[in-house]
Length: 369
Image: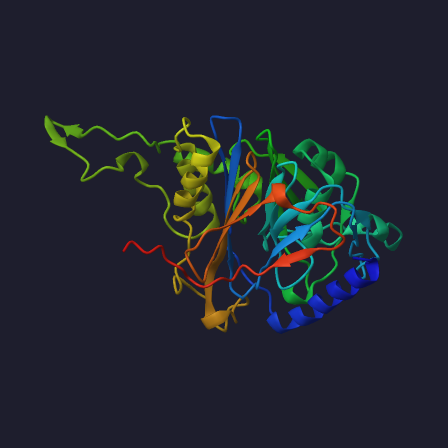
């Protein structure tokens, strides 16, 4: 795909996305699980108040890609050529990735951070060394194999304040989570116009507040454990818990970002360490079920700045589980409970253009009789 075609596709997608304004809220949750065979499993949900119309998007090696500069036009920013093949999910028909994994096992996604994301002020002379915020993940996955490479690479470029019509003519307010094949994790944020890269010792990330504040909140839940509590004895009288689950009594169950962060942390921390990477993919699906937003649980009225979605509700549009040892990228769409899989080992890495797959399949069932 030559640059003129890419530029036209990007511009068309941005123009089409105008119909989706205003900006949308999201309540995304992500985490990492470790297998006992050296592999890792990444899981994340994508919540949006407006239809994303995501497709599975495959970017081959050696494909020219155009950075969006400070004028919000493709090609006026940092242009690059993809080094690694990538598969992931796009949004609003745009040739960008909001989630994905590359052929080296680097995996991650963009999560909404509307209250904290403020990008760098880029001078016109530096526009050609900058990209749009919505391009952060695509840039990382097509260029780097490890989180250490990402750290070095992002310190050399700028993320500008170019606008996307789908975000109400604002910059896409996102932060990025990344995990590599060795299990190293980082979070990349832009806070008050500055790049902030934080090592992620827990492998979990959600939305606002700033990631460091999310980590500092963990100590407030030091009492939680997956081990059952003994009966409470007072003056010789014994008071047993009413059921199992007493160790995690007080685990937040709502959809607020800090609550989801703590819930994801303790659920992943409690995952069996004896499971293989393949077994942990199943664990990931069970954990992700704790974050699935049923239709109507979060209502977005017209008076809300993020309102206007399908039926005025926010839903889990899709859910991802990625196995970076066996190189399988799994996904489940809102419209059905079917799990679809994409084998990155089968990518035509030398293709000449981006390939898109329709993943909105009808519900199917396995007949028992």
